[in-house]
Length: 252
Image 1 (spheres, rainbow, N blue to C red):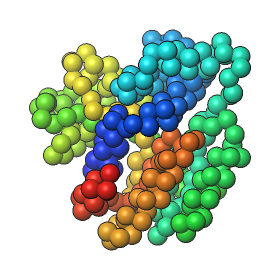
Image 2: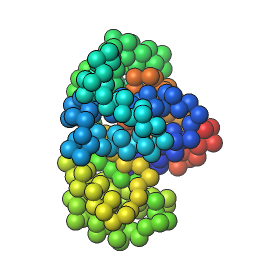
Image 3: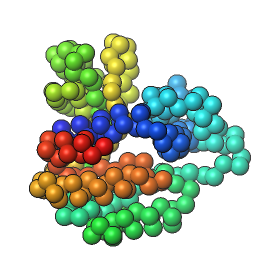
Image 4: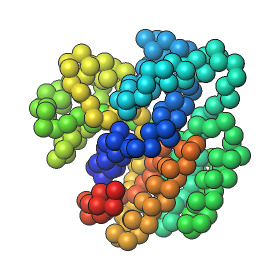
């Protein structure tokens, strides 16, 4: 699973430095809007909103943009198009399973865009439930290894209900159930431990290993999907080797 974590952090770092901030801000604003609509506009009560706002601030999104997104979600902005969060399932080339998180105001557009990319690459859309059984929803926290002691993080993780702590070269990753996210988040914040990246994601229960060429083909499809306006995140059960990561980083 380490390859997924490393790739997620490469993307996270790139997103913060990306010159196309307008598109990044739009995706972040949609997360805020949906969170505010589902749980209200107070981040002290609505933890999903708090997380979305933290991610937006981490990307240096202006406060005015954040406030406008909250108002669209709570209905204060009557002219805003209604966004909804939906999940699509499918397969990339070579049988790699995909879970796509989307936020959209037009389902027909979104599904058509996703289907076009998958079909063109030799993949296909799947019915609801056809892929989801190969994943489980988890919370994760990636903590810079050079700033923190593994044993300290391990003890903290156990105390807050985490399931696993992975010691990587660059990061110490805490993995836990979705319901433990707030507890772990608040404890890290209390202890002054900063995370490089955190949130909820689909974790594959078993990964598919491909050769380098096929791995890069699949990653190209995933990146094209993630570049779609309505797609927030793509999870796969592809094993991302260090060799593939190195090649992907060179191409960034």
